[in-house]
Amino acid sequence: LLPILSYPDPRLRTIATPVKDITDDIKTLISDMIATMYDAQGIGLAATQVDRHIQLIVMDLSEDKDAPMVFINPKVTPLVEEKQPYEEGCLSVPDVYDKVERPNKVRIQALDQDGQVIDKEADGLLAVCIQHEMDHLNGVIFVDYLSHLKQTRARDKVRKVLKVRDKQQLD
Ligand SMILES: O=C(O)C[C@@H](Cc1ccccc1)[C@H](O)SCc1ccccc1
Ligand SMILES: [Zn+2]
Image (cartoon, rainbow, N blue to C red; front, side, top):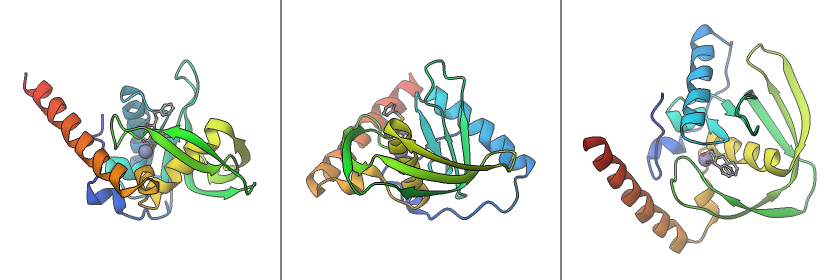
């Protein structure tokens, strides 16, 4: 499993670079990220969150956690103006949830792990998640959309959660 960076780690602000070619190292990273995402009960994970700064996202919105999706060099384009709120969370900001407004219909263009072109429309949770992951590749975290007060509370909350986790590891 890969360690997930926690807010406000500055490495989460790194801009990811495009993947040039899909090497065996990248394929290993993809399977490690999928395992890490499942272990952390996430439905998405961006390479930035595991301190690898390439344009790579994994997601799995299925019930049985048996339908992982891979997006390499993704490009997301909103297809509607109107935005909808969704209660977002983030594996890098544990135990913090808050409403974020995003366009709820987007076009996704990317490559899959075999280098095949993906070009599809997404709405609902898939649209929310892919935009949340795209933000990670651009060094943006969902708390950035919240008030400064909520950002301060988020920092305090994460510090507390990490202290409890570290203590548990020691027990
Ligand atoms: O990028 C991450 O940190 C994983 C995110 C993905 C996500 C964020 C907001 C809305 C949907 C997905 C989450 O931690 S995965 C946990 C989760 C699961 C179901 C619904 C919302 C969040
Ligand atoms: Zn996140």
